[in-house]
Every structure is written in structure tokens, then in C-alpha cells.
Amino acid sequence: MTYVIAGSCIKDDSCIEVCPVDCIHPKPGAPDFETAEQLYIDPQVCIDCDACVEACPIDAIFAEFELPAKYEYALELNEQFFDEQSTAERTAA
Amino acid sequence: MARTRPRVAIVGAGPAGAFAAACLLRARGDAEIDLFERLPTPWGLLRGGVAPDHQEIKRLEDAFDRQTLKRGCRFLGNVEVGVDVSHSELMRHYTAVIYATGAQTDKSLGIPGEHLPGSWAATEFVAWYNGHPDYREVEFDLSAQRAVVIGNGNVAADVTRMLTLSAGELERTDLADHALEALRASRIEEVIVLGRRGPAQAAFTSAELRELGHLDGVDMRVDVNDVELDPVSRRWLTEAGTFTARKNVELLRDFAARPARIDARRRIELRFLHSPVQIRGTTSVEAIDVRRNEIVRSDDGALRARALDEDVETIECGLVLRSVGYRAVPLPDVPFDERHFVLPNERGRVLTPDGEPLPGVYAVGWIKRGPTGILGTNKRDAEETVSCLADDLQAAALPQPPNPAREQIDALLAERQPDLVTVEGWRAIDRLELERGRSQQRPRVKLASRSELLAAAR
Image (cartoon, rainbow over all chains, first blue to last red; front, side, top):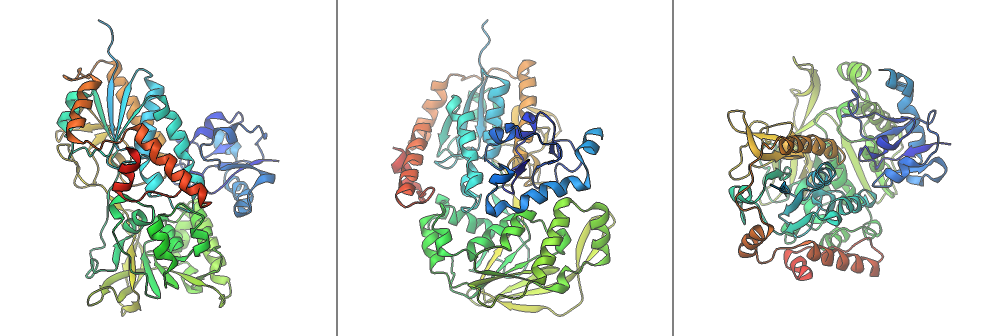
């Protein structure tokens, strides 16, 4: 299971602040932060703790099995974002 | 001597102003903040810009309310700084003034016919459908079969969606009643969206582009030849393209490969590498002339569009919405950078023409950095400005204003603006709008004229 950020994300970084495993990227200061249209959750790292869901001011984060139909694509999209650069690579940088 | 509480005026209650107020209250719990707003309602483009069918984003209002107005920050609505009260008057009443006035006008195309009736800035259309009281009386002629939207950003996507959604879909939103009525009667069947550059350079977010291609009963047309990238763009996409740009190109290829839907209610056509050269019509818009471009890499490495030496093509249409960006306007008595259309500033400290910080004057949001970024961008922006202000307060670099008492500014405002809207007035407006919404199974039914808003606030 993983949590998923949907396309309505406004890049408020409250979720990043509360994530205990640093699996939400890009983070402010990362080279691709400004150009990113939203934030993404790394499904390989997410521990399903729900903290980001509580923190998001616009309820843009969903448990994988609760994704509304219009955001179904977002599960794969979050995953694909980390195919280009994994959390491990991002945290090492 | 007891330390006096800093008094801060924030001018503009949009997202930048709200994030700044929230951030300042976290940094300096003793700050007394007055949030000035030209309109009787707070939250700026969150209320008046974000599309009515994107209600989930409007939930941010609750966070703004919780972090500002419910924490003692005062709302002073229906007061225009520079008109009802001047900058120097504010400086006499506050320790610091933070400008968060945004970018209130649109960039122009600079082509003949741009100002013909029927050619509008997309932002005017947005203000109209979102119930901005200054646009209540504006009438959009939606009787032609075809509209042309110029631009490839999210505002272009928003207005295209509003022109193509069904009445049933619009009725579930908080779109202004006058706009709902006009859009119900709209005869527009086709919207052509023009992009000056190619698919790889489109400024849409992939979320907005995906949404545009999945509207109920709306066909999405993209020419297969348009999504074949030129060598310059192909190389750029591989070497420097963003995740979003790659997703956009994938989406556009999918759209181009779809068979045409002849049963569609309406049609959207995305055309890339085309620039408008002239808007034509005798008394109102009848057609737009467009010319093809190619992508070239300029000396600074940026990819730009260059006109091809080909004949212009004429597209008949009755409505043109120009969506090529916002631009800030100068504020009376505050320095302005005429080249970049922002308040000259360093990390949010406004600078004099000599480049020295102007004590006690700050900027945040689009008036500080230009019209870029999305809602959340203002949070980091506000943190930067507020950290400068907090440092200046800590260093005792800001003198006590001559008239620091709350009663003094209140007396001045009572004299200048008898129809001042306070937080109680805004709550009354909010309650009434939500109630009206509940009875119609809509998220909210907006009061869209200044007189209705003020009557509800009284």
C-alpha cells in the first residue's frame, strides 16, 4: 500500500514537513522543485502512516485504494516520478 | 520600557497576503496584523481565479481562515490602499507594511485588432465567471460557433474548460449565476487553443492537460504532425525537459492518436507552433489570422518560436480570449521596477531607487517575484519576506510609527470608507453564500455585485 498525491496538489509543503521517512519529493531547494507541477510520494518508501493526509490543507493525498476515479492515473504517475530519480538518489544528492 | 507589539498592515488578502499573515503569526505571536483588501471578500485568486470546477483547491480557504482571521488577524475589506488610504498614511500607523497586491492586469499581444469587441483578456473572462464584482455588468457574446484561446498555460486550460463543460457540470460549481446563465445559452461548439511554441514547451501542467482531454462529451483534436517533435525540441526534452514536459508530450501523442468522436457535443483543438498576427472584424471579432512558427534555440539557450515565411491562415471566430500572462501595475508612492513589473526588492525588503532598503516596507507574492509559480509557491515566498521582517523587528531597525494605536487607524478608515467590511461582515457574506448554495445543491452561490456583497455584510 502507499499514499498517492493527486493532481490538485498546490505544492504547499506541509506534507514534506511531517513525513517521517522523507518519501515526498521534490523538496524545496531541490533542482526540480520550482518546475515540478506537484509533489509525489515514493511508493517504495511510503510507510502508510497517514501524517501527510492530515497535513494537506486541500485533501490532495489519498490512500491507494481510496483514490477517486478521476485521479486513478496518479498512482502510476507518482511511481514514474521516482523511476527518473529514486528517493535514495535524491536524499544522497 | 515595555516592548510594544509590532503593528503590521498587509495589503492584499490573496494567497500571498494570507500565507504572509499566517507565517508572521507563527514567527511573531505578538504581531497585530491588519489585512487590507480592495474587495469586500478575502482570499484573492483562490476565490476569484481558481476555476469553479476545481473546488477541492478552494479548501485552502479553511486553512487561511484558521491560520489568520481565527487567530486575531483583522480583515479590513472594501478598502483600497492608494485610493481610500495612502501609503504614507499606512506608514504613520504601522510598524511595517507588506504589499501583496499581485499582478492585476494582463500582458498584451501587441497585434492589430487586439481591442476589438469580442477580444478579451482571459483573466477578464475568469473574473466574470468567478463573480468578481468589478465584472458583474460585463457581457460576453457567446453566439458564435467558434472561440479561439491564445496561450498554453493553465489559465488557457481553465477558460477552455469553462467554454466546453455542459450546463449540468457547471451547475454543480460555484460559478457566478450571471455566467451560468450566459454559458447555458452559449452556442460555442469549438474552441481552438493556440500555442506559439511546440508541445514540448506547452506551459500546461500535465494534470490540466489530462483533464482537458477527458471532458465528458468533448472531442479533443491534436494534429499528428504537431506532436512529431522537431530535432531542437527532441534534444531539449531528453537533455533538459521536465517530468511535466515529458508527460505532456506523451498525453498529446495519445490525444493525436484517438479517432475523431463525431457524436461529441463540443470540440477542443490544440494547435501548436502558431502565433496570432491580427484579429479581424468590422464592429467585433470575426476572424483571427495566424502564422506558423518553428522552434529555434537562441543564444542564451532558450527555445523560442520564429515565424516561418508562409502565408497566414484565417480562422473564423466570434470570441478571442488572450491568455499570455499577467502583469503587475505600479502602486502610488511605492517604488516600482518598470522593467520587471515588480516592486524592486531583496528577499522581500522593498528597495529605494538607490538600492537601499526602504525601512518598514516589504513585498510578497506576484508583486515581489512576478506572476510565476502556483498557490503553494507563495508559502516559501512568504517565509522569506517574513524572516526579513522578523529580523528587522528583532534588530529594532523599525521605528515606532507616530500613530500606533488601533483606534487611530480605525478612526481614519471610518472617515474614508464608511462601507468597510470587517471579519464579521465577511462571515455574514460567507454564511449567506453557503446557505444559498445548500438550497441549490451547489458548493456556494456567490453574491456577485458590490452592492449585494455590502448589503450582506451590514
